[in-house]
Length: 134
Image 1: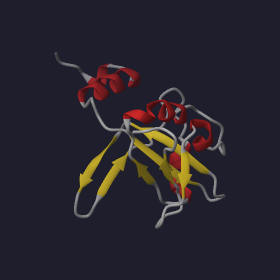
Image 2 (image 1 turned 45 degrees about the vertical axis):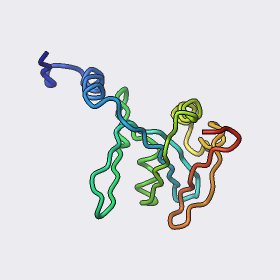
Image 3 (image 1 turned 180 degrees about the vertical axis):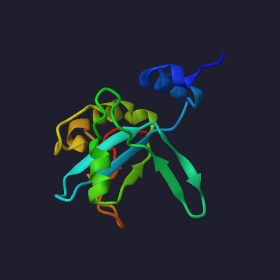
């Protein structure tokens, strides 16, 4: 099968490109804005780019339907720090809840039921899942 990317819609491109690299890992990125408000959001455009130096990448791309930016990107532009949290199968429902579109300033940790703890070197918090065995 051959697919000409220039002849299909952005939604169709995303479908085919996602399936080209599936299954793929999920990054659960936590960020904070200049006012200290936390954001938590999963990203499937995520991978390892380098070991030395350690570089993980994820893409908080624009929304396809209207081109608007996501809160994660807005936060990183204000406070250039992020935590990439590991996602396990046991937390899939909570990660799904964190992916919902909430208004700016809504804490996805609260909405998803995930617990946040302070990171040692950056401002965005870490995810801790309590009460359920992994």
